Image (cartoon, rainbow over all chains, first blue to last red; front, side, top):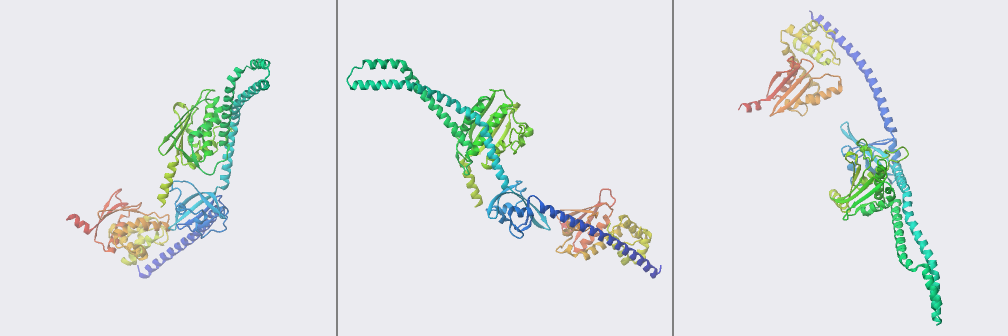
Length: 442
Length: 187
């Protein structure tokens, strides 16, 4: 084959290859155009989703400089444009705010954080979830922010409503508790009033006797009248009955006063500061206001350790916890046992670093299938309208979140009932934890 | 298989053996496009085998030798086009593990549908085992590339090859023992 022929053949192959390459190039150009279009659509869609998301979405780099700030974030923080500023400035300054916002929440083993955010210089509570990802080799953090201000207000209202509901439920029982002593106090006072009217005449006779003696006249007639009147009013009987009637009345007044005091404890507004609390005393108060609730249900036994240390907490909230646990037991028993067969046992004891409270009842127990949900807000096994589902949610929130304690619910074997075991750290433990934390920060 | 492999084979034959041999190889292989390959296209790897077999028949050189030679040629082209992959690397033992962990990663970014072979590297006591696995029987091509790489870095390394699996060139284990290590083992 000649060189020319070879060159022509080679040229023909090159032409064909070039044509194939051009077709391929055109096809790739079309594909690239379509891919670009899709990419733009996707970018636009993603931008719209982020921009219109109900939650604030703030993205920032490893030094905290904000790179993305969606519409909800602008509304939540009331900031028109936060791009280029530091994310830390959106929250109240604290020692660990930087570390918190630069640690993905899943790594910190917490799904959401409640942080104090800042809006127009005012603090508000925000729920924040932080995640991180690598974009073009750089670490980018994304914080999902939800404004909890309204929810906190609603929760507070709901909590107050729930408390009032409990108090309302107890009102009838409390009225009965007060009515009984009031009844016998009234009877005693009526008795004393009647007796005093009779004694009044006798006192008048004594006055006359005194006058007669002063005038040095004969007293026989007056003495005879006094003897007759003494016989009529049955003076020995009155001498015997008066102290008892007075003592019983004073006891009744004491009972009424203690019930009123306990009720006041439960219905008073929550104090915003913690104080030293005697849990045994709180239990006694709770039992005083629930006495009537349990009268028809059965028996309440207590075994309270006398050497419990004080816990440091919100008194009204912990009282409410006790009330909720007791009403929870009472209602469980009511649904499961005949009147008089219920049994509730309350026990306290000192344990390492704290106190332990156990409330055990012989109700139906807690089915395993709902064990994980009993502390969920609005979860209730009662019929619609019969329960708010806030009782145990409040208990959990108060014990675990507000007092760094624990609560474990157990179903007793063979459907023998349920037991709630509560641990609360003592004042000493709280102070020691605080010192440890301060030392670790230093 | 990416078209650049085909165009490089034809270029190598044209350069080393002449246009006539290349033309006869293409004619004899009788591929669907009559040898009109473009580097940006994608073709059936069977066509490459057809071309190599045709070349072997034309030159009376065994297919494995031709494929290994082609591997060496490809390495040279690769080095010329992508010098950045070689920056800061002074030994084949440092470079070869990057084939899987770096180079193939980059290739997949450009060609997501590329069906690449795998090269698993394991080093024990200074001796590296590089295991080649592919859907295609190109262990010879891999050997050519590896040998060219060792020569490029001027390493004194003894290379041995062991076939396994279906024994059809789709799986092979290459052992790269630096002479220093081999001497120490013998001593």
